[in-house]
Image (tube, rainbow, N blue to C red):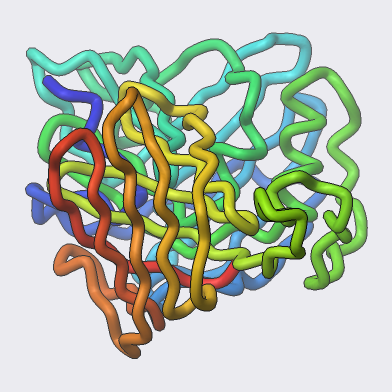
Amino acid sequence: MRLAILLSLQVAGCGTAQSPSSPDATSGNSSSGNSNSGGGQAGPWDLQTDGAGATLVITGASGGAAIRLSCPAGEPKLVVNVPAFDPIGSEERLSLGQGGEVVALVADSKGDRERGGVTGEGAVPDGLATLLSGPVSASYGAQLSGPHPVPPANLVNAFAAACSGGTASTPPAQSDSADSASGSPCLTGRDGKPVPANAIKGIGTEPFWGARVQGRCVTYSHPEDQSGTRVWTEFSGTATSGTWSGFLNERPFVMRTRPQQGCSDGMSDNLYPIAVTLTVNGEQRTGCAAPI
């Protein structure tokens, strides 16, 4: 089974399982934050901490937990529980991620009697904060939960710190203004002239792919290259109506954007303001994008 079943690049939801009412994650010290992205199908994210560890929870439309991500205290382990998933005797992989960032966890094919649904476990990934930096989805066989709204960065950073052995206290919410990257070579063209920041993130399905743009640099990712590969391009236009042209694996790589309010991947309720076409590895792909 291809890992590409999941991707929050607005993963293809082959399954139609609905999230039943289920109890919230174990209570403890709690910090919540409203997401700044998504179609309103899920409630706010919540970070819960106690002596047993840290748990990051997204509430589903039914009011119960849609996805629980936990890091037990003293164990370098990530545990992901999706109460709405039905166990499949032949399926032992649960995937979690967003965009081109995906991690595969080992699932108990008999289901989780304690929490309900299906639970997957694995080592804490190195890029946990990056894994949770976009609309999050989980998949198991043909069943899909998400994409859910983007978790607030302050909760993600606190959860990642707890999972790495740090303290899970919640830092203040981060400013929406990005750090200045004026010294980045991505913001300087080959002619030495400045290149606009063009801070957008593109996503696509069938097949799944992601593209994070900074200036003239496009970091292209897919299930087999989850961390992504940076492509140095020649850029023209603007972030919403531009062209990035370069080479990947010695083959043309061309990404184009154009304004399109309500751009949809056709597989979720999320809408984006930018349409994307992509030529990569001799294939034509389409998707959507939004500012980051």
